[in-house]
Length: 210
Picture 1 (cartoon, rainbow, N blue to C red):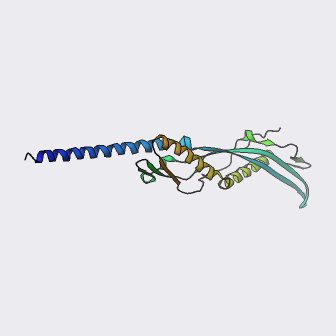
Picture 2: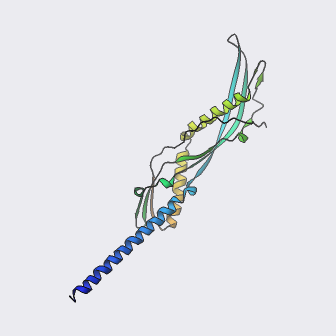
Picture 3: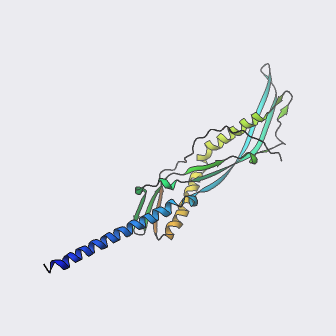
């Protein structure tokens, strides 16, 4: 009986140490995951897209073109991209000592701005008023709506995803090294750009002239 007590004591001690190590690793993982999920603002990128807006309106008499009114303006869209780190699942974060592997969600557009105060008409080229033919404010609104649609559709082809991924890797590397990791691997779910569909129907109030 006396020989069993020290053995039992050792087993209990090992069990307590094991539980302690497990709890320590669990707390460490929770800390790392929490820091990563809080880094959403750090992994955002902002882009400015310049767009020339051009439109024309032809006046016809008996199906014969008589004259043509034209409109040309310069506009600017601001695009902010990022990743939704709240979507990270347990399988997306693999920690082995000082080595960590992250599988991140795809890059998405988190904000798209196409403000009217960035619209500037080129009065030297524009000729919006012709005899019996003029480009109205409603026509201008339609030109800008078409331009915005064109910008949105071209975003996946402007190198935004690659640049955003590079920025994200750089910022996440800095964060993870500060947390003590020396071997860092970062992958993305895919190389697509997520862009939410929106209805473009807001009117253009004014167009500035130089």
